[in-house]
Image 1 (cartoon, one colour):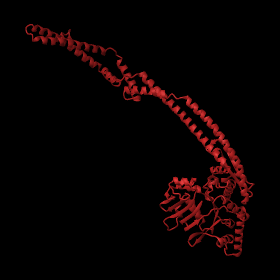
Image 2 (cartoon, one colour; image 1 turned 90 degrees about the vertical axis):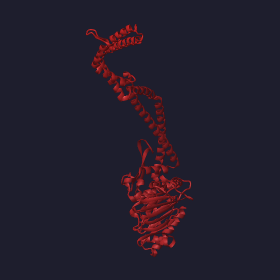
Image 3 (spheres, one colour; image 1 turned 90 degrees about the horizontal axis):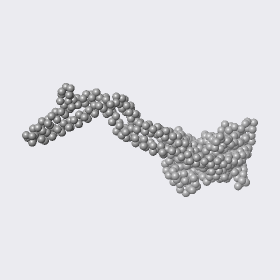
Image 4 (cartoon, helix red, strand yellow; image 1 turned 180 degrees about the vertical axis):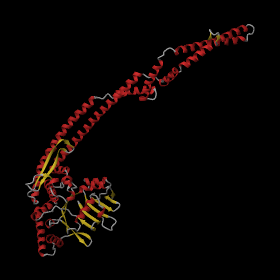
Length: 574
């Protein structure tokens, strides 16, 4: 409940303190006195957008302070505590400041908070029904919430069951999609790995081949030079019999024979003879190996082509799978191991599909229960609102709550909810957002609030009902209303105030007479003051609203008559 609102330097208001009581609070005053500024102040307290142009001229900042009473263990107190706010004895203090050039700041229970947090915590404590807020009633989500609130506790349980079923179906669908996506990705990966392994196994690279092949190719490219070198070496070692050129082998052998002969006269030459003989053997072996090398150079004329083709194959693998043949072979081993891992289990997908089918069946059942509750509530709510609209002087109005089926169950059920309205029977029903004027929307909202309060006391403002049911603020609900209809509007506001705190900005004396608390906004020079009136002062204000002459004896008598009638009506209802 809103208990106090203090406004400083906002528009025409230098400073004003408002005290709100339970029941119905009426705010009256001359046109242009600043009643709208009070609604702007209330909007700031609940987290609305700040317009720095509203700061009173010549002042550094505007400041609005609100004091709310909340249920100590209720949702609002819990949300405030979670935001770091202090809630003492069920009282929550909200401060909003607005300064040109530095924007606005908010404090909740002594803690600075972002505007989003302020709106989330305090916004549900006040429901403003005015032209600036009528977009809420035009919202399909808001209309759906009204129907569900009217349906009562059983519908709340059905909503919870549906939410759980929808969440389970969503989770299972996502899990199945992830599994299918993983299967597709696994197939793509497995295909790539299999191609790579096949390519590597077909080439079968050898460790070190990436360096051995270039060396072999270089050697073959220099084959002619190598052949000439080998032949020269052979000639040097073996000699040339045709040219009678001795070679190293023959020379070493001749040296050995000569030394052995000399050793017969000098034993010291014997070791030298052995070494010369050994040298002849070594030179002979070397000549034989060079001869074999020379012969190999001419063994396969196509070897160069084969080596180059092999090098191309190995290089292709190196570009794809590793810097060396060893790394390429290691990649193939790892790929074969990964291929075994990617062998997905079809049993898992089948199990998920079965779970999804069961969850979808449960969701369909939950949707049917939800739809049944909405259908019953929609018919009853439409009838109740239609009765209230007739009582509010809109005898020709028609109101309908339509359920529009969806192609498939969505996050909030299997249908959307649409309020349809016409102010005149000869005109066809249209969606409320398109078929009602501002004043008509205000009275439709009042009719909805009264219908819900009568149907489920304590759940006023349906979508936001509960222990911390919001303060209901009506602006322009009496627009275009007079005579008997004005009294009916007043009676319904008073009746609604029996189950919720109601604040109404009004121009109608009939409505003002029903107020439990009466606040008057009045201009005092260049500023505006707000004060509570009672007794004679209240009678004078109602007389002013009736005739513009607060001192007229006839107007004062009429004002007293209205007050007496309101008191009698309240007493009869009580």
